[in-house]
Length: 141
Image 1 (tube, rainbow, N blue to C red):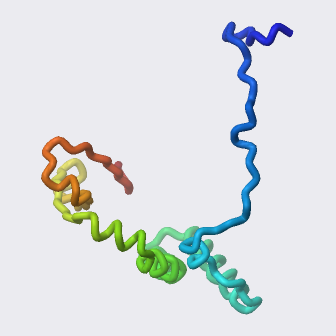
Image 2 (image 1 turned 90 degrees about the vertical axis):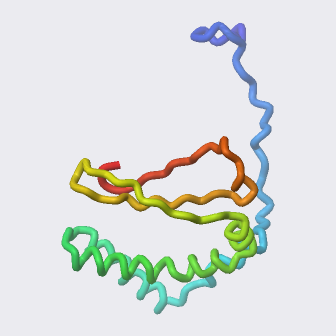
Image 3 (image 1 turned 45 degrees about the vertical axis):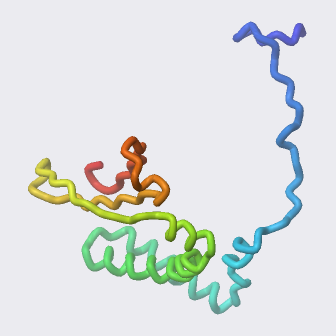
């Protein structure tokens, strides 16, 4: 073989194994702090029951089931959210950010003001030529 890629007419790239490294198994302290201790069999059974209930609720599509699902989801997520909120990196991000909101009127599906959250780094507050990152979710996006 000539080493030339027939499709592209260029030499084939030969790996230099730049990404073949072995992880050392070291976790940063902030990651370690978020790790859950091992669950007891009782806690695991309770978690499994909750997951089964949440799965059951996703099969329904009524207001009561949706509300119950959200309550369970918040219960599951709360410990993680609390851990993130106590992280020094999270606190620093909050301190360096200005959070504001506005409403954008729409009429494509009835009159409605779409709530928009705006997060601006404090060091860009007075810049007039800033870029924007727009993330939208939900029905009709």
